[in-house]
Image 1 (cartoon, one colour):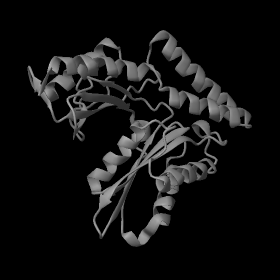
Image 2 (cartoon, rainbow, N blue to C red):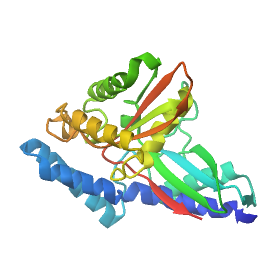
Image 3 (tube, rainbow, N blue to C red):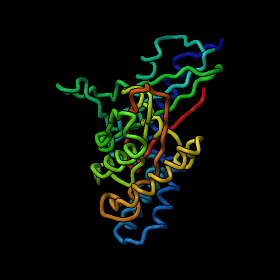
Image 4 (cartoon, helix red, strand yellow):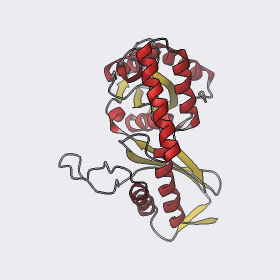
Length: 280
């Protein structure tokens, strides 16, 4: 059994909150540059040039890539041979978010009550997701999620009779409705299977996978490629001004489900697809 002080979790979460908001992952940068090279519409090229300049400035000057520094989504893959000591794990994570958003000069965007509102003032609480895995390590991933894109997400409880075509149509319908709102070129996470809540989590976890890493199942890898091509044929383009680059990536994650259902969730992210991980 390995003991890990929760203070270590606080320190790592603080650092990841800041770094995730300042440094765009290389796979996302490369995808945006690839889109720029493929565009022949002047406005689309200009928008992508501005996007590239923006993330380069953020990286060089260590400032946030976007003013919406998001709600902190914290994923922990916890080895079953780990024992946390020195305090409460949830409190430690939230303290890390609190410090990260204060010390990184990041916007505080969380309200205490969904209806009555009232800003919490420190961007807590974090949205925390835990998974027990083999080993004695902990992988911490922080994915700040802005709500211009989160608001464009959707879930649908299909009957099995809807088939694969129903899922394909749902993806295209959701992206078309989203239009320019999620600041395209967007990244699309698709979760299929599980239950109502699990499908949504799968979709969000899909956004944490590098967009240049296909699903290990060839069937779903082919579906990712097919749907990305179809999304880009919608012509929404960068920031909605038209062009070939409506999305830079589309990842699918799946789980077994009930014989009577086929849940499908779509979690959309903007071109600032931020996530940063560290293993303790």
